[in-house]
Image (tube, rainbow, N blue to C red; front, side, top):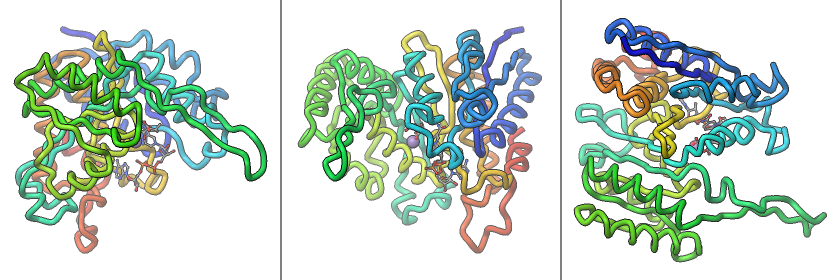
Length: 358
Ligand code: NAD
Ligand code: IPM
Ligand code: MN
């Protein structure tokens, strides 16, 4: 029997609600596929600030280091929004974990499944044309991590600054991730940048072109971020792999999630050079719906599937989860945000969707 250690960090807001469903699915997978999972749960984010005075306590970091993979929920919320930036859950916990484990390659797959076009807010004929995109987002550099960063001066002359910074090495390794992924998919990479304005984007283009030489079968296109956001809505089927820097990938992936129907459908995998990963929904703690039992657990459950596939190589178990999620959606077992207003009374709760997937 295979045996694995998973660090479970549910976090804040809807995090614990959707994590509860993912753990039910993990238990089902464990008995069906005869795999033993040793789960260790740790506080992270706002709850960790409340309980331990820090968003990423030592015990949590140690627990993650000792695990084969990290299953992460979501963090943050209004209660902790007024803290200084470096103490907030987003920076002190999530960005800290991404940086600590060098999780530079972030995979966010978004797809309109045939038969499920009606979940998309796109016009019917556009949704019917198809949408199957893998956003590959650089996750440990760029404007999120660049230094200096700060606030100086006073009064009306006070100014704030962030630094966008990319090395050739950082661009090369994420571009390789994108081309490798494209080889297993539609053999097209669309690199998203702002090369008409940003020096970083100029280097990004140059290095991406160099990497492309090693992948003659893959078609490389470049697109400006502003145009990309509109082409996604007009010609969603013209994309395969979208290669993005940290900030652009953050923005584009929310749009991709919504094209499929909901933020609550988009999973993500954040992986380093040794294959170690953190797996989390692309969306956040959703304070507007937290505590009501109505959050969509699918992004969390698909993140678990990505964990099994990418970190543990348990392909059959991952396939089974993906298939069960697809069947659940096809059977119309939907949380409220996926339904039109007049259909809302048919909405299923977080736990009903989780049970159906199990
Ligand atoms: P959000 O992603 O939490 O919510 C955006 C919208 O999507 C909301 O209307 C929300 O209800 C909806 N949504 C998100 N997940 C959903 C789900 N599973 N089911 C149904 N609807 C869902 O973004 P926000 O409101 O801008 O941020 C809230 C907090 O979460 C902030 O503190 C933010 O920093 C944090 N955040 C954390 C993560 C993370 O932990 N990985 C990611 C994004 C945002
Ligand atoms: C995401 C989130 C995070 C990000 C925040 C919470 C720091 O929006 O994972 O997409 O911007 O990377
Ligand atoms: Mn985001």
